[in-house]
Image (cartoon, rainbow, N blue to C red):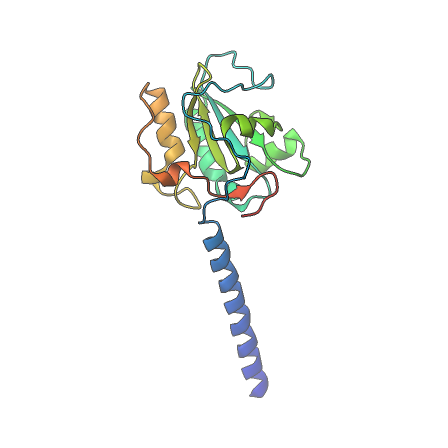
Length: 199
């Protein structure tokens, strides 16, 4: 009888600990990413130097997916990002920009995200676009002007359609509209710091 009581107490403690860790991690990733001291904001409409690695030969807008394989938020975002590529891939050029202090091959990143799209490792591109966390979406129009920089969605798993900010930006640009008025939640960075994943 005493042994059963100890097992129940142990399982209760274990379940409580797992629940507390899950709650804590969920809470941490709902906080805005701290703004770096040397951060320089980049305004919408700024011409972005995409560098030699991103040749915009087909005159399409470019969607930059700032990604860190160690970032839980980047991993949660995977299926949503895949759905954007499937839906808009004929009209927009998608590029993954890896921001990590670890070394990866192009093939490894393509395998992690489940897509055969261009992958680059140019961290200076984050500065040029005003990005300091992952995951972040950047949409550059076909004249290389910054149209949108921000979050994919207000929810961790990108499941809320009414806050699908990156999708709204894509629809606005492709319909030749000015950027829709978005909430502060769309434009304030949430997720992991770069290049080291922490929040």
